[in-house]
Length: 358
Image 1 (spheres, rainbow, N blue to C red):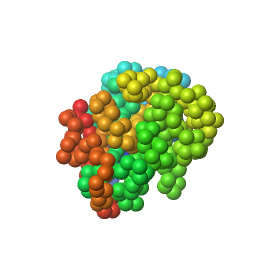
Image 2 (image 1 turned 180 degrees about the vertical axis):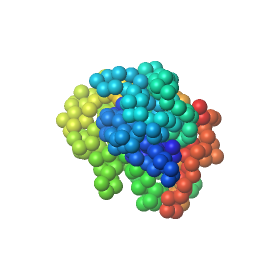
Image 3 (image 1 turned 45 degrees about the horizontal axis):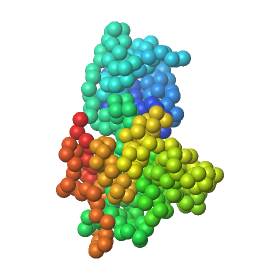
Image 4 (image 1 turned 45 degrees about the vertical axis):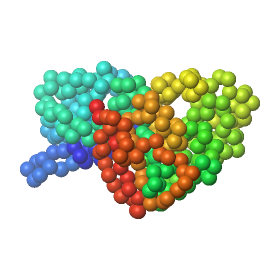
């Protein structure tokens, strides 16, 4: 199952509204278990992982065990459900990780298998599988994308210095890891202040992965982003959404649209973009995961609204000093309900990750 979960991450962020699921078909003819079929949800969401794995296994699937990271689907479309495909292939045993919260599936997929006489084992490495497809599960349950908050902190607890643009707090290895994070989400979100001060591009700039750049979203109620900014200039190559209100200047909105940006109408609350409504609209667009990259005010706003599901902190050895912009949180001051799940070292920098419990 651990191998199936690793396989499932291959297409994270590339499967549209469907989760990226992994499936392994394993048989043992007396000489030890052998993987005879591998499948991961295809780019775009179809075919599903079970279909792919069964196609590779062919007749070797008969009498074998299928390891699936998510309960096989049970609803009919133009093609039969994956649960029925497993039955028709003659699989003898199905080991599942996490259940599917979709009402069309929940419990029904496993029921189809059991009715056909297939042995079913549920809940194997369920937490690990749920972590890998958190975006899908959160969107299914909460009707909004998973929100990942990423911050880079200097050794003195700062994330930057007003008026000085981007400051390199972490080294090259850690920055590459951030690009990998971007490649696995549907969108990156920043506030307009960060967009104006840093002029970022927010794309994936790793060899061979530029096509996995996510949509960029700027919380820009008054459409102040310059049409000659890096974000706007690259809007025809990588999607750019401007979360603005109806009262924003029409000429500025038109200039951004001519550059290729898409104006995303949002509601406002207390003079700011209404985040719950924005996230609900993004989920309706099919987005399952968003990465909030800055700045401090935007990070604090998501935290105050209780909308953050995962917190990622990169810690560098840089000292920013007097006049620096203090981070809204650090490893010793986490919001209630978050549990540390990972630690890592990237070059000279430290990485830690917390997930909201439950």
